[in-house]
Length: 131
Image (cartoon, rainbow, N blue to C red):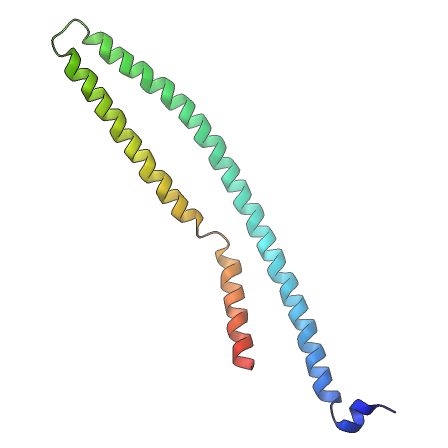
């Protein structure tokens, strides 16, 4: 004897079963989306790190040689101290520019997984509407 049929709960159980199956499929889709976005984020971060290290090495060597060349040019002149302070100020401005760029990139990195968050927010709204 089927008690669910007798009590009229068979349709209700079937709807819940379908909802659970649909929810499981949706969860799998969201997990796959998050995995794909994570792989994309890791690839971009790895490229960024490699390019940052390479750029840093080349830039430091080039700028140190340029600073040395400028100091050598003005070594026997009365402006030697002024040139040294101008170079120090230039390096300070370069440091500030790099710090601003790093903060900007850090804020952009906060937008990672935007698609996954949007999908989960939409799913949550849909669930709340159905309740």
